[in-house]
Amino acid sequence: MIDKNLLRLLGNNKKYIFYCVGLMVLGLFANVSITASICWAINLAIQYNEYSGGAIIFLTPAVCAVLGIAVRYITSRLVGNLKDTLGRKAKKDLRERVYNKIVKLGVRSTDGMSMAGLTQVSMEGVEQLDLYYSSYIPQFFYAMLSPFILFGITVGIEWRVALVLLCCVPLIPLSIVAVSKWAKRIFAKYWGKYTSMGDSFLDSVQGLKELKIFRADEAQHVKMNETSEDFRKITMKVLVMQLASTTIMDLVAYGGAGLGIAMALLSVRYWGLSPISALFLILVAVDFFLPLRAFGSAFHIAMNGASAGKKILSLLEQPDPVCGSEAVANTEIKVDGVTFSYDGKRDVLKNVTMSFPERGMTSIVGESGCGKSTVVNMLFGAFRPKSGAVTVGGKEIERLSRESYYSHLAVVSYNTYIFNETVRANFMLANKNVTDDAIYDALEKVNLLSFIRENGGLDKVITEDATNISGGQKQRLALAVNLVADKAIYVFDEATSNIDIESEAIIMANIKKLSKNKSVIVISHRLANVVPSDLIYYMESGELIESGTHDELMAKNGGYAKLYTTQKNLEEGYAEVLK
Image (cartoon, rainbow, N blue to C red; front, side, top):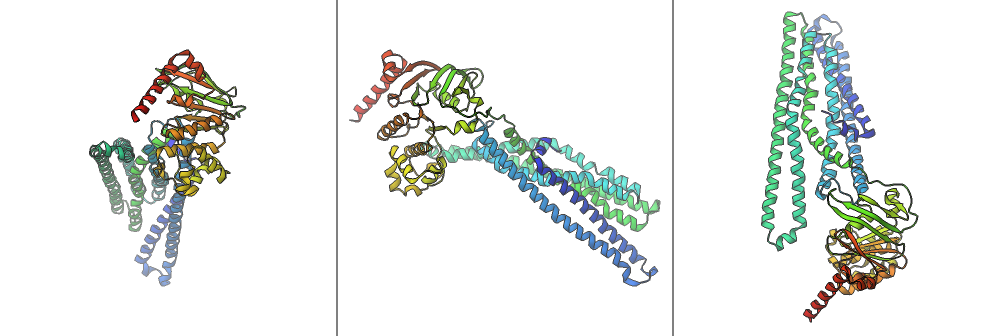
């Protein structure tokens, strides 16, 4: 009933569970003392005429009852506070661990989880584990201890009644076990349907424009309704399971208490038990079952939390990328005989060897699917080679400290993220000491200065996903932000794909200027952009076919020359059509 792996996630916070259980046990003794005081007072009232001193005889049981009530109140408050502390600390620690894990994995896969799935796991999943830790686990340990404590108290009064009550107690855990397999299957499906519904909703919202254009919004609406209906059905199954398990536990708990009461009455009739002692046993009988009854009620919380916890564990248990601790000595990058496969079967890179000097502009070109972007992913550690090595300054990338390497690296792609902040704040993320003059200079280099000045200046807020600027402006802004970062290595992966020709020419001129002092690596489908490169690598089907300057490759009249000529003819033909 307790998942050791989930319990291990608590770390040092496990101490709060023991504090809670200790206080709950103290509260149990307070309850027993209150019950005993009531029975004592009733006994004194029955025999009132036999005592002298009047009502003063009720003072001692009254004081005991008041003390018991005070202890019970204080322990209840303290238990509530400790559970709240446990829940808050567990949530804080788990969210930090999930966030740090995602950051460590970085550009790597997160076990196939979508963005919606990761969001649900890190938010709703952690909330469910909060209830699992703060409500279910303390109640589990308390429910296991309390029947034996009560048995120890009552066995000296009437062993038959105590034994009957203790023997009936395990029926509740047995009933829980009986429904646990059913519950586990349901909750596993519940979380699957829940994340599926989230994925579908996020997908529909993000693609709403395309759905409207293609007039497919009605079909997507039907699909979302089906997903929602599946989630509703599984939710109803969860509720039915909870109601069924609660009913079974009620029957066992109150049936067991009733059996104990019956035994107490029989003890008065046949085995000489005093009526007051029988009353005490009758009042205490329910306490044998209430902790387990409360534990059973928290069972669905546990199952939901455990299902969410397994997804969190799946994320946290993924192996971290292998990173070393060595610092970057120099920024010359070499790809030496690298072969790579995504699935372990078909090689998408085949014995590729490339060199990227500390200064200069190096380009990788080829038709779509030739392996250009895969090489880039190898350069910044997203993938590790099946064979061969990627080295930086003569050191294999696995030996380098990721912090040290990334402090030298900037990657600008067609989908570089712009944060929902002001223009100035986005630049300060790249360089916290950047001045306004440096920002303006970077904006001018990407032909974006006039637009920013005319539309709110550096205090202009970029909305989520940069929806208040065009795609080309977003790319140019991303490029400008990376320019102020002042890195030693710049990787431009289709960085000008959505940019007009005039701006593209300005940007490529600045990239060439940047390469005088930096290592610049350019990935581009448009070969006109790579003409000024110091070195061009041409790839086909995962293999390096040709390398050299533009003039050298054109002279070879190979694959590069044919692709360049084809593109140039198409562009000139398109220009003629426009005239």
